[in-house]
Length: 335
Ligand code: SAM
Ligand code: SF4
Image (cartoon, rainbow, N blue to C red; front, top):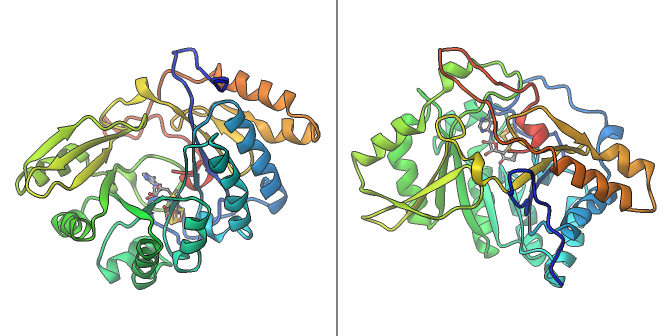
């Protein structure tokens, strides 16, 4: 029996759900959060049981890949119970992949248990290998702890992909070092352009480093061969001819990727965002709580939301003004 598909008005099948399980974090990265954040009241958050019910409803509607994010997913109390519960969908074959995006600060504690739940890969955010700069960009993070977390992931058999936000005047000088370090560890590396999400203390235009420039810099050292790998998201990939290493570029601002978008995002409060760059959302928490026993209203609400998935986003940094910015923080929707 084929699973019922969620197909949007532009004939894109939605098979990928990203779920933010908390808006909290043990770091305060300058591009992501203000130093003094007001977090959501606990009662607004979906409980782990509600998250299970929602994710399972999406899986029942044909979602094949689940990425857990935040905030920092591994600081949510009891989150391992949620991963353990989700692993039943891997075991049944309903889900192809269960994965997470993390700052790796808590990875030493959880890597083995994640692997036991069927997690095979993790995305780790790491913008610099310089201890002082790491402390500066994360405000509260310690590089040593994160590198140890990455080691723990490797020891547990998890494949690691590094995500590095490209920040002008900050990690541009480390570009080659970062590529070489990832190469030496066998990690894929993906560069991300800063997106205008939520109020932070820094000026976005000061931070913005176009990946077209970053790519040109890489070409001074290596030959970049475009490869057709696609994940249905904003990443485009190349291979370095000299080393075979894979690099990704996430360029929501300079490259339009919307036509192949296969994903939607669920916040930790149960709002479903059909597009990262648009404000339209569907309140699935209200439906869930109004119908505690029966998922029919919930699946109908999910289908209605997918029917509203827009063609694309409106981010634009051109004309030296940040346009199309959305008010919510990335930590709410999940990166
Ligand atoms: N705490 C986890 C982490 O840092 O990996 C998961 C959540 S974090 C919001 C997910 C990703 O979003 C990270 O790779 C982070 O670097 C990225 N991110 C956060 N704010 C961003 C922004 N304004 N523009 C681009 N990427 C951003
Ligand atoms: Fe926390 Fe991740 Fe945001 Fe950094 S990017 S503040 S680690 S949620």
